[in-house]
Every structure is written in structure tokens, then in C-alpha cells.
Amino acid sequence: MIQLVYVSKAKDLSLEDIQAILRSSLDKNNTLHISGSLIFVKGYFVQCIEGEDATIEQTYERILQDTRHENIVIISKESIKERFFDGWSMSLVNERAYKEIVIKYCEDEECNLYFMEKKNMLTMLKEIASVM
Ligand SMILES: Cc1cc2nc3c(=O)[nH]c(=O)nc-3n(C[C@H](O)[C@H](O)[C@H](O)COP(=O)(O)O)c2cc1C
Picture 1 (cartoon, helix red, strand yellow):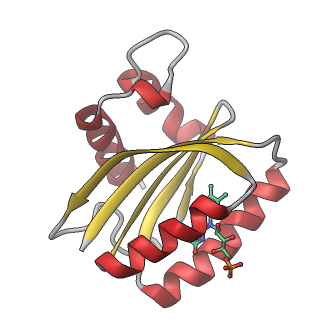
Picture 2: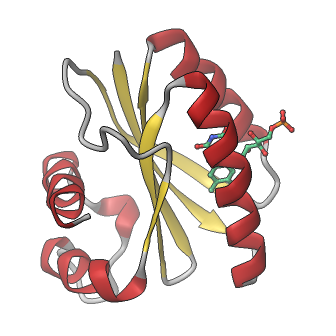
Picture 3: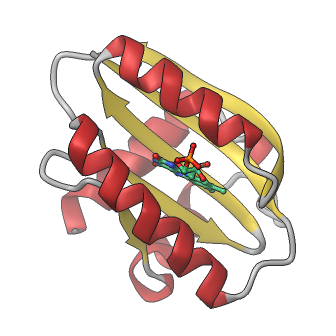
């Protein structure tokens, strides 16, 4: 199994657009036994996807092609034995729950997720998973 975490920039999306992404992801991930979370913060996405190696590679290829976001950069890609988001086909992390956690882990004032250290990113995701 692998876990892949990336950051990307959303292209001027409405809440409805994000909910549409979430709905299609939920359906597909459920079928493919993928778990994970989708964090939306200040116009950027942080997504964690976990599952069988080939499934994650194929899903990531599809995500890369999606024109609803850009500047997609992998922060972490790890072989895992246990999932962080077991039981969650995809969860949209809501503003109130995640804000304090994200702020805690972001190093600079502008909170540039692209520069977040991998170790901090994984610790942050684990903490988010623990409050879900
Ligand atoms: C930020 C973001 C996250 C996404 N996450 C997933 C995901 O976890 N699983 C998934 O199957 N598709 C995800 N998608 C959607 C895919 O890019 C794609 O639209 C969807 O899988 C449908 O693919 P298809 O048209 O080839 O069937 C995501 C798209 C965006 C923009």
C-alpha cells in the first residue's frame, strides 16, 4: 500500500465545485478501496490518498489531468502498512476543525503549503485524522 500527499492550487472554484469533486472522489475511491482526505485552505488543496500501489498511481494520474487545479506538487509518497484515514473514502476537512491544526504546523506567516516539511505535513494529517 502507498500513501501519497500532494499540494495544488485550486482554479477559482466555488463551494459547489468543491462538493462536486468530493462526490465523484467518494464514489470512485469507495470502489477502488482508496481512503484519504481533502483539505481546502486559502485556495489550495492538500490531498492525501491511500491504497494499493497501482490504484494510487492510476488515480494520481487522473487527478494530475484535472483542470480544476494546477501546480500539483507531491509532498510525500510513502509505502505504508496502516492507513491514516481508514474508513474514509474521502473526507473534506472542514474549516473550523482544521484551521487551528493547519496554523499550528505552518511555518511561515503566509502559510505556504508547498514549503511545508514532509514530516510536519504527515504529523498534521495524522492529527487531523485523529479528530475526525
Ligand atoms: C483536488 C482534486 C482532488 C481529487 N481527488 C480525487 C480522488 O481522490 N479520487 C478520484 O477518483 N478522483 C479525484 N479527483 C477527480 C479526478 O480528477 C477525476 O475528475 C475523477 O476521478 C473522474 O475521472 P474520470 O472522468 O476519468 O472518470 C480529484 C480532483 C481534484 C481537482
